[in-house]
Image (cartoon, rainbow, N blue to C red):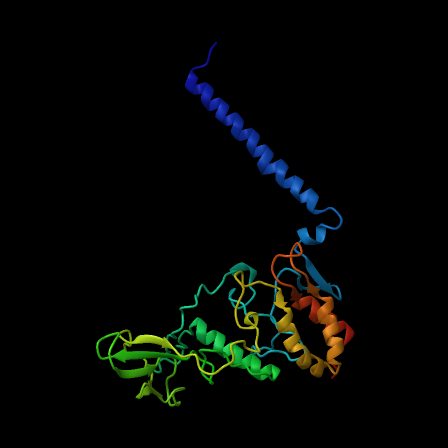
Length: 295
């Protein structure tokens, strides 16, 4: 007996659904799992975990912080780059800050609310991190468009005719409180400190370059997070910046520390994509094994 056309079409659709479910929902995943267990691939398939003394201490693929309980860098370890994933390197919250280069004005904290810490702009985050790393590593951490105190050097410039004409008022948007403005005057007008709650939207946002060198001693990856927030690598330049500090904290020579940096430096992908990087966790574990901290 010939089935109705509509019923034949439905049966054919169900057959296709069943076959594709078996192939793509069962056979293919099991095949991939089996391939992942081939010797040489199993470690990567299982997460590239690193064990020490029988305990898993991390993954080659996910970065982690090397700080104390208060978030201060441990001087005996190489430091990772910043992370915007949760509280830092949280695989369940992988993300970037989503702040762009035009994000230069901070959200000021409410002085009447002790829990309100405000929100730093991307520029101030970069400035404060660069200042802190410069102090930690004993180098000049100054950067263009940053104040000496480590905030974005940004003014709201008010003109008589809106955006043109003589300057009538100038406010340092990221500085508040009892400090002195990073710039005393601008085009002959005294610079004021910002006050929480005031509207400065009619002023022209004007970043001030300052006299910092074009190329900072602190590399870019030391002050910015990766797109995923999980990058386990730092640049070779950032690793080299930390060599003297780590060597001094461990009582070893900088040359020996540099040899370990070289050992755990990975090349460009396919020989030409990206830049060489240093896996921070593997490097720090190698340091603990070769030159443990005394005392």
